[in-house]
Image 1: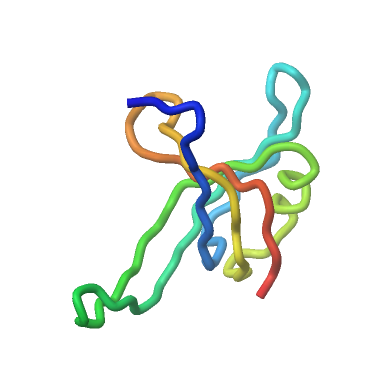
Image 2: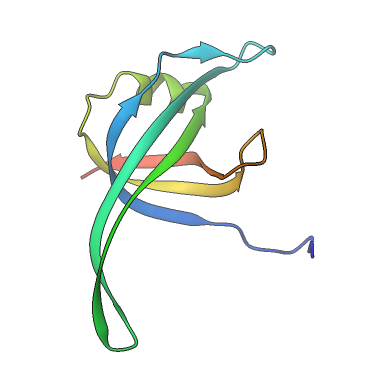
Length: 101
């Protein structure tokens, strides 16, 4: 089901655990692929639950250039949206903004 007014916002505090080399799209836009790692405790049905995950992410433009220079294990707050990966297997977090924590 698709909706033109659907909401797709994603926010995550995470550490950068993998950064690939800066690349350029065929249109000449800087792009970088990353892997983020998140760990927290959340409450679900009144029961604390430990959550740990790794998530593939991508950034474009000036943000890609900035993120490509970050050190591994840099922690931050990342905001953007999620979409299917290009091959349709899995989800990719498209980072649109981040701030170091």
